[in-house]
Length: 338
Ligand code: NAD
Ligand code: LMR
Image 1: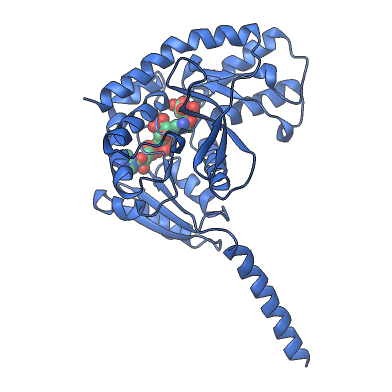
Image 2: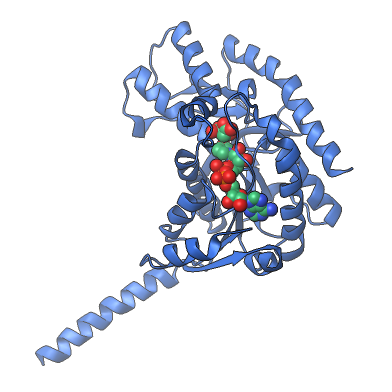
């Protein structure tokens, strides 16, 4: 009797476990550039995400090793590594979310736009494959310059007849992560409670943190707000300089990329009120793409939220960023249509 009841309680336990994992839909996430500085820790973080059932790791080299390594972690997802262009189709087929950290990073003295010549071509060819193999996937673009690579992706998808503006995202989460960290340090509030929207784009002055809307509220001086704004705008450069030629942010970016992909998966799964900042097709300013708070749902973008009330300092920041962001967007569109 004891044996029977032990076995029935353990099968109940097993059933409960299998129910709890079966109750989450199957979701395939593909990481393109998975053997890189961002790709590897991002692969790790996505392997830890219980919403992922299949993790597809693609790069031009090195993915078999990364995939074998990550696959030994005892979490839900099945991991597969794909290497070289001939395996890209398989890597993408059936993907619900495709995260793209493929491309070269900055060295000291470079702007993100200096990466355009190499990364624009990489993004164009990867997006051509996405249009062919997983046209309905949500695309999370990390490759720089994001202000141009997102418009490139949109043009590639338009040409292929697969463009859905609700499914293309420039990942600007690292700007939000930095703004939260820096604000919490200065305002002396618990970092886990901080929220700060960051709008605009993802390069220099196009990164506009809205500290006037930060919560918990604080009484920071105008000088403090200016310094926090500048530090957020230069956060990437701070890391590039500290790494002294060995690349740009990888660990904090992997964290930020994992947060954003998780938000996309939650949205797809019907979790209500999932809101993150992202660089998306937008009509909240005169520009065709703009980062702001976005509500995520079962089809990707459910609603692009407005900017909310801005301080005079933020209004000035918004006016000054428009011309630079406009020209980066136009550069991407022009490249894709050459
Ligand atoms: P990295 O050089 O360490 O890794 C890039 C990886 O991309 C490499 O493994 C490389 O083999 C791979 N790759 C190159 N061409 C490819 C192709 N055609 N298909 C698939 N993979 C390809 O660089 P990293 O530090 O991981 O940075 C990657 C990109 O992310 C850079 O452009 C960087 O500027 C950008 N980045 C963006 C943010 C952001 O906030 N959006 C933050 C940090 C870095
Ligand atoms: C960042 O913000 O860290 C990235 O865009 C990488 C870079 O070049 O700064």
